[in-house]
Image (cartoon, rainbow, N blue to C red; front, side, top):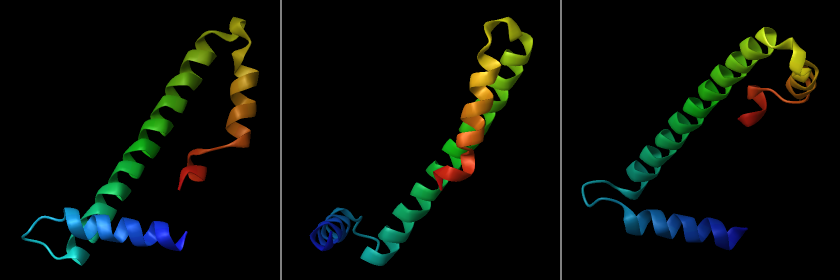
Length: 80
């Protein structure tokens, strides 16, 4: 694991734009990653809500039980 972290650090330093320090570039990459994660969490929440609406409209399918089990096992909070 130590070598992997070192390899990532070297790759970040080598690929940084010339007008930024390695630290600035790493911070920018971190912020971009966090924004992407937040975007996916919002998308997951939106899709779960949309699925819930569809399942309420179509109870004949019997998928509402499956959705409730899945929702109970995992939530958007688990994707931190």
